[in-house]
Image (cartoon, rainbow, N blue to C red; front, side):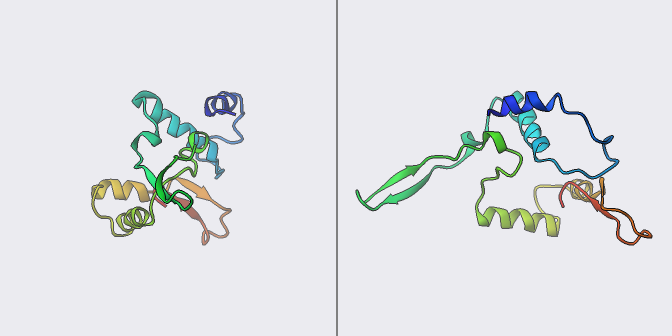
Length: 131
């Protein structure tokens, strides 16, 4: 099944709730978001990835590693990164440093989605963009 076919099917799904009323996680919507970015830019993730290599023990040479096909899950867990890059991302979020202004860091932490059922107002969790 192609990603564009999944997108076509999503158009016919009924919403279970109005937006921002009830927490419902959906990986498919992250895939749609990645398509929203990829379509106008006419590019996809593999165009920007470095080429990896592996050692062929039989022929004793390095061979190019083919990129994984992540089109169907791009944006929804199809993240390709290194441990070092991911650590830099977490450090940026935790310490609110480089790449983003204080306003952007604040906006990523602004509560947007109510998670769970409130019990006397003590266990309400709110999700933001960065967390």
